[in-house]
Amino acid sequence: MPQNRRAFLKTTAASSLAVCLTGCSLLPRKATGQPEHYAGAIGLPDGRFGVSAFNRSGDILWQAPVESRCHSGCNRPDHSELLIFERRPGWSFYVFDASTGDRKHHVKAEPGEHFVGHGVFSPDGRWLYVTASRYEPGEGIVAVYDAHRNYQRADTFDLAGVGPHELTLHPDGETLVIGLGGILTHPDYDRLKLNLDTMQPALLLMNRRSGDIVGRFQPDHHQQSARHVNVGGNGRVYVAYQYQGPRYETPPLLARLEDGKLREYRFDQDTQKALANYIASVVAHPENDLVAAASPVGGTIVVFRGSTGELVSRASIPDCAGVQALTGGDFLVSSGRGRLVQVGAGKPAREIATLPVYWDHHLV
Image (tube, rainbow, N blue to C red; front, side):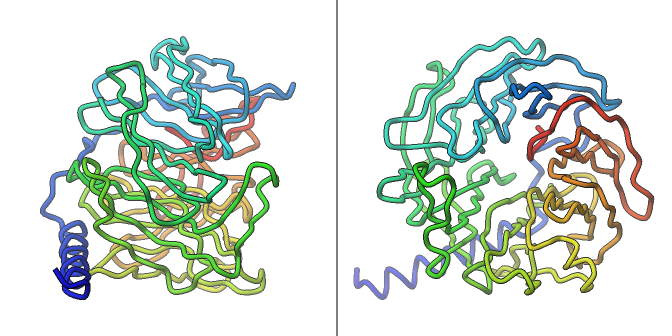
């Protein structure tokens, strides 16, 4: 097949898939009722690190130690297992009994690779997909593990880019949604960003079985690092940026995938400034049209309507980062200062608890 014909068919297929994924005809992967138990990576006042599980009231259910700082995690479907990934550069991930906190596995990255803090399971709970980096050549990959075989490495998918971060599974059960930050780093250089002038960030759609990239969508500016992603119950895909350009600029930091393009949201200028060019979490609520996004740098949480971008709530929460949906339509927000806060549309933020821990960037 001629190269231009092949490229045309691939582009057409990607556009068709994007239209399908942003439609509302798909059944949600998650039930509308949200769990009453949550977990997150923590730092402790004495300098140690751990994982903590808690209920909706902020009561600690269990706490387990880990060897180094962790970032995010995921639950294994139909199994009482919670996975937590070390923070970038992450050299391992942990598997815990979600009910007790007992450690079941400690899986290390392959030589020459490191994890970047995120993973997601196939719907049947067998296959684990983890974003990672081959740091010498600077290649972003998705590493695939077989949970039925004690998390042995099963496959590797190339992302044709650098700096992957968060990934999630679309409600269709087949498409991985991946934020490709575009930032080249190396563990020897303490997170130094090595390619800010030549970044190529993107939102990627990948077939989870073949590893084929079936959609690649770029932000308006090459320094809008596309790092965090989420998918609503209606199939709408969201992506959050961390802008790597001048601090005085305030470009859009959030977008939705619509008609094969990234449609970016812009709030009023005060809100844009409050977000400080940095979004650490974006979560679409499965029960409504609301989306929440947190900026620990700006100490600001925003809630907006996914379909229109209308800002419906904004609150100041210093070092806020973790976000999860609560039953009833609100969101739970955690901060690096130990706070758990409930936020929603058109209502003041309500503190649930303040605990003697430092929550890391994500809640599970």
